[in-house]
Image (cartoon, rainbow, N blue to C red):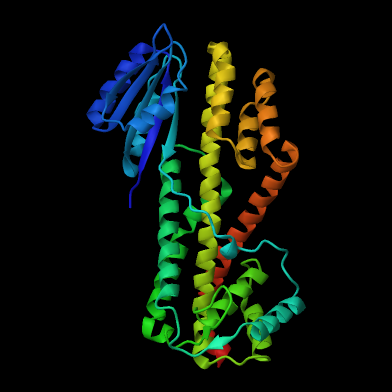
Length: 395
């Protein structure tokens, strides 16, 4: 499942450029070099690199500088980045851009971020769910939809984990949330295998299904598990599960098959919750890398080619017309105390935000903290679910 990535290095030393190009040739990857002639036009030498990569980076080249771009598969990214970084009488700067496909989470499926409810309100939620959702007989289920959702979520998680692992292997700093995903990958994999093994399609298709609403055609017990995960913000224990089921059954009794499926449905929903949180983690990691790259370009222009600073700011605004608060925070942090640059960057960021830049950054920090807690809680709940003897609980 290895993906491709692009390493980019910036050099002022021509001898270093020659050495790096020789080593990239030996590494048998696709690469190119970009420099600027005295009249300002780009001079490009390409050894198989895709044109879109050249077009993306040639605009960021300044006078007396050479950009080297190399593309290769995920497992080879570390060695390639090491080549780009090693040459230096004056230290070169290298960045890694892994190929990312960050899907948007549909609004109807996004994990709720409302404050956790007290037990009494959770009971009320279970009763309301039982009264407002109709139930259809077994056999009207939407094929293997739920099992396909599980497979899709797990594959997406594996892709994100590999992308984050590649970044770590190449020396990129990882956030606490990214570390959590990498350190607990084995737990998620084990939970996926357990759900697939213990929820065969024949058994799954015998479960009563939800007749209406956004989960119509999915097992009723899955909608109950989803509501519980949302109510508790992914952190719950055995007693909360029992209390929720008890409150639901006061209005609408569950079948024995549904009761036995409840632990598996909770795991499935938690895996989906982790996947959605992982998408946000990956997106933030990518934006932090972009902010690091752009900060480097602005700092380099200000110090070595001041006439290029304003065009670079304009170029940045074109490439990122709607900068996120995450990108803004990282960019401002990298440009700390560089007032000659911030004088251009701050007004652009302020005009792109809803409200003030400070408020947007504060809200982003709160979102990151909330997601981090939800992620750690979801993984903790997955671990605890596997330790409960459900036979004793339901008997």
